[in-house]
Structures are given as structure tokens and as C-alpha cells.
Length: 342
Image 1 (tube, rainbow, N blue to C red):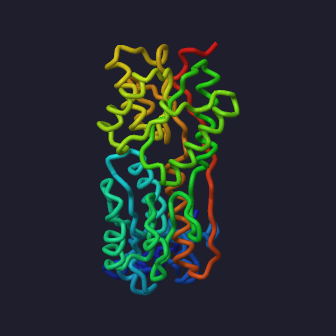
Image 2: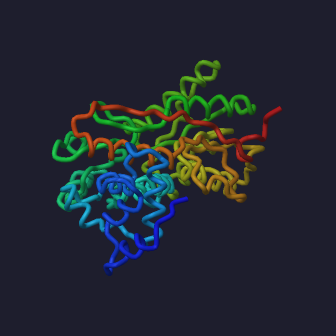
């Protein structure tokens, strides 16, 4: 516990507003160390950071982000470009990003493509015009955005030549296929949207490869591309896929999987007895009792935190070597896919 002499407390609070130098003096550190500790700089040891934070709380000191940004010659803001915020994956990802940025004293601007991939270049430029210190970009990845050199860029989902954080989508697809085969399903279909987007491509490849390895290759009539990831489109595609005889479906994300369950009920089929369904992302909706969706968890919030952390490092060290991080997925089994298991 830190104790300060009454005189020291009076001196620290003599002005109308406590200053950083007051915090540094009572915590017995330099002003620079106090500043780094309050901004979450990883170079500061945990005991020192806690000591500074306790003093700052006692003095009711608040970091002035404008003053700090001016001193660092930064805006202390980051731009996050997402594909479609109506999809719960992007909302959960944004939560992870923002949590890490707040710890470091940064704020985020979110640019939502609303499913219109062609707008990525325009929205990224708007963020740069607001003087963000860096960009986090989800799929789809516009090559011009990813190739910018005026600000650091980190890709969420793999992109060659750019620092990135992604899930192991090949493994995720394999997990889904192996689970449905083990549960006794045999006419297993696949539902997805844009096959040129790297996560979709890798999930399809892992899924189809696992089926082929088990001697049950993916049938062309059960390999279904949908116009978009949106629920209504997925519902229509799900109806078509089930009418072609699929007794199980791996949907490329949880929204599509929820639409497949609704399509099965529309056709009078029971889930999981008649149709097994597996989604991807393990978003909070997957655990809803009315859905009870088996899903591949790619640790979305952790991915957002890791991407933000990587970008903060690149802001501090612009010449740092380009690195990538891949998170291993896990399968979360619920009631939507267990109807034919032994």
C-alpha cells in the first residue's frame, strides 16, 4: 500500500486539477514512466503500473487524450473497417478490438461496409483523413488498402505481406466435417457465400478434404453457394439444399446456420434428428436455447484484442518485422448436430 505524507497530498492537490507530475512524484517514478504506465505500455512492470494507477485514482487524475496525443504527435485513434456489423461476428470482433485499445488509451473509429466490398477503399481513406494512427481491416481485403504505406495496417484474417491475425480456417472446416461424420450424418452439404474470400476458401477446403479422407467426398449438388451471408438469402439457399436431400449442413457462419435451422423447420424436418447443422464463429446467438447451435469457435474477441495489440506495436515500431498470428479453433457441440450419434 502506498502512503503519502499529509503535506505531499496537500501539495499534489493544491491546484485545481491534479497533474501527471503530481502522480509521478507520489508514485516515486519519472513523469515519462508515469505516462507509460497509465497508457498500458508493456515495457512497464506490473507492480509499477499498479502503483501509478493507485496514485492516479487517489488523486482523481485523468489522462487528457488531446494533450497526450499532441505530445506523442499522434491522434490516439485507430480505424477499424468491418464487412457488415449486422453480422454478430463483426460486432464481437469490434468489442475485442475496442477493449484492447481502451487499455492503451486509444479510441476507435468503425467503418462498416454494410456488405458492399467495393466501398472499402473509400471508407479507409475517410479514416486516414481523420488522422487515425493505424488501420485494422477485415475481409474482404482491398489490395490498395492493404498496400498503404502512410499508416500501419493489420489484416484480420490472413493477407500476404501484411501483419495479420487470423483463425486456422482449414482446421475449423475439418472439425466440422469430422464431427458430422462421427454423429452419423452421411449426405452432408455445405453452405457459403463468396468463395474467393480467404476464410471461406480455407473452411471449404478443410471441410471437403476431411469428407474425402473419410471416403465421402462432397457431392456437387450439396455444395451450395449463396448470394450473400444475409439471413434471408441463406434461408432460401437452405431450403434448396435440404430439398436436394442433405441430412446435415455445415454453414460458413452462424447467421447462415441459423437460417438453415429455420429452413428445416419450414420443411417439417426435425433438428437434429432429421438434419444436423454446424455453424462457424460461435457467436453469442449460438448458445441461445432456441437455437442450441454447434459451432466452430475461432476465438473472435481474442482475435480482435490480438489484432489491436499488433497494430499498437506497429504504431510504436513502424519498422518492425511483419508478423502473423494464427489462433487454433475449437468445436463447441450443442443440440443442433447430435441426433444420429451413437
